[in-house]
Image 1 (cartoon, rainbow, N blue to C red):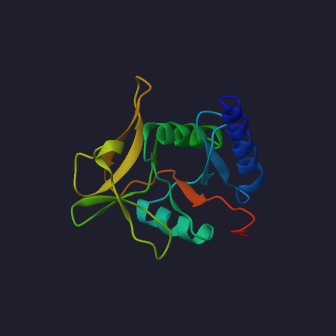
Image 2 (cartoon, one colour; image 1 turned 90 degrees about the vertical axis):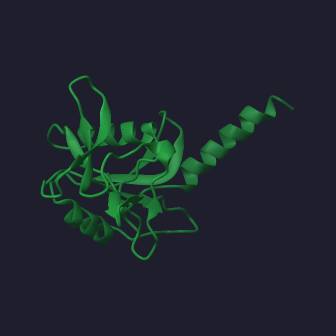
Length: 168
């Protein structure tokens, strides 16, 4: 019976690869390599104000929004993605953290409620303004409060498509 567990996991992975896919211009989130999740990320190779980036993401694909980072693995994936799919070196970019009434939330698709920031995924030292992912000289990447008046690159995110939720 113990031998069937790896086979089941392998079959589940194969089904996910065959059934889940991303729209053109988006790539499936995987961490570590080969472990796929039901989220697609797209790099836009442009700079914008955070509010304009949110609007653009919501208009670029059905149910798209500014990228989330629920844990350090997703943050690392996002940074690797934006630096490897862009046309220039990126040291900072907007993620989907949004301040409302002194609390932080993750951006979501049009018509869906924002998701509150879970303290286990990180903390933010301010209650207003904007947040960007910043890469520091020691190689670490963390959230930093910044003025919303900066034009930064950003990533959009959308759920994967599948044979039941064909999204084109």
